[in-house]
Image (cartoon, rainbow, N blue to C red):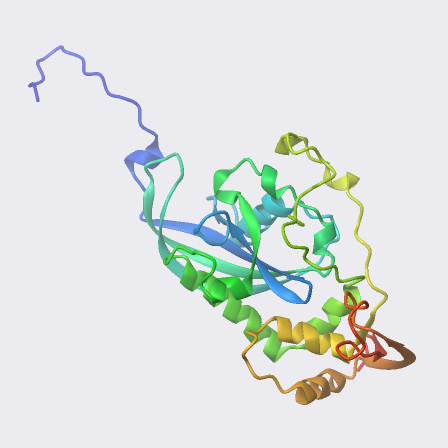
Length: 294
């Protein structure tokens, strides 16, 4: 390095303050979104092995606002779309800000989200998302747990923690499933090779900024508030590994013990499986779910 002489001027390249003084602690908000399709559990993950979508928590926003911002970027919710939001806890990991030299250890608040029953009609433009870190796809949870879906080893514990949080919540409060079924109009099968989450109404070449405004989206149809115990048991089973033993009779007693199922004189087949053989899909008694009943 040459010595500085009096009167000479040095040329210093401009550096953003955030690069000159990197924060030692970066707070992020991660979201693991779950949905049910064809009576099986799916997870919304970033394309590649990197796990759930993640957003930095800006200095002037709360973690809850960052979670909402991530959902808005991914899913383009209709105004009154409901969801079940569960907090899975804090996780520590390493993070580097994209496009910046800022890096350090981060504390992430992992949320697990169960989308409403009609989420497949809230057609998000996931394949048009302009932010690389938010390119996402739906993956069966069974494939993840079987090791058929590659996941970054630094991210996998956070995902499994969110999954365990969801399962524990369902075990503790199975009434969530009754609310889900009462809201569910139909159950469509996940057809092989079809990207059912994509916005087929818009040309693939359309840029994300040109997607329909929220007010132009139609609120998806809701169910008529009825459930069957066969459907409730089938939905409960969807949240857990296939080899896990479940006391179906005890589970049905728990559903009835909520005192929020009013019996009707109707019977019906399991939704989405009406074309199945009579042996595997027998008509089941219909109940009306009354959330305000005691």
